[in-house]
Amino acid sequence: MSKKNLTCIVCPNGCRLEASFQEELELRVEEITGHLCEKGPTWAEQELTHPVRTIVSSILVEGGDLPLVSVRTDAPIPKNAGFDVMKEIKAATWRAPVSIGQILIENPAGVPCNIVATRNVVPAGT
Image 1 (cartoon, helix red, strand yellow):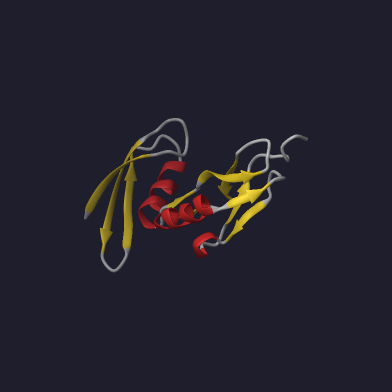
Image 2 (spheres, rainbow, N blue to C red; image 1 turned 45 degrees about the vertical axis):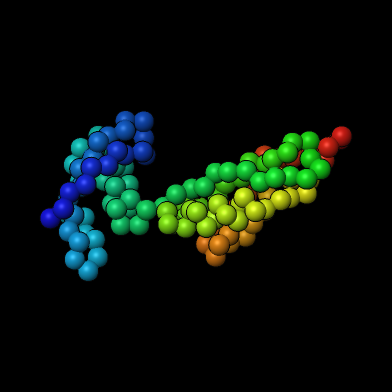
C-alpha cells in the first residue's frame, strides 16, 4: 500500500491529509485521514484518481476600453489538459464589445468546456 500527503484546498482549514491507496490496474483509495470536515476525503480521492482544475486567464481585446478581458472555464477540466487550453486562450483575440458570460472559445483543445468572459468590455470611447 502506498501513501501520499496532500493539503486540502476545499475550505479555509487547509487540512494536511494522508491518503493510503493501492495501485493495481487502477488506483484505489483505501483510507484518508487528517480531515476536519467531510469535504476533505471527497476532494482527496478526486485529486488522486481524476484531478481537475478551473482555468482563469485573460484574452486580448481589440478596440475596447480595456486591453484585456478576464475569462475562465465554465467547468473543471482534466489537469493534464490545462496547458493545451491555455495555448488556445493565449492565441485568441476578441473585438469589443464583450459581455459577462459570453462564450469566447467553445471546446478549447477539444476539452468539453467553454471559455467565458467574466467582465464587460465596451468599445473604446463609449
